[in-house]
Length: 117
Image (cartoon, rainbow, N blue to C red; front, side, top):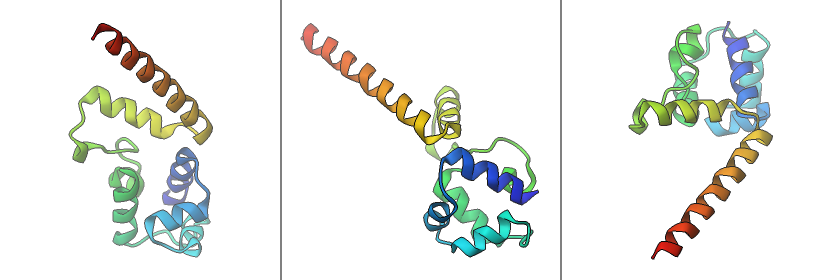
């Protein structure tokens, strides 16, 4: 059901309901109605807004079909798209760990390039 998929999405994004609503331009009350099952048929604008803001696969959100995220508009390689999809599923605290690790690897790589020059 849409309410369960929306709960999964918001949780995986590491957001609060209010923050999620603001990011997509809807009220917290509207999102709450979907999450509690009071609104079972959200507007097309809702689906479009979620898809645009978070690269969510609209078919997954509507019907549970396919992958959660869709990065086709970004022209990513399959490897990059897979990595990005996995990253987006991490809780916020774990994303921070990954960010720190990537920053450290980049700094090391840049330092090695400078030494070669």
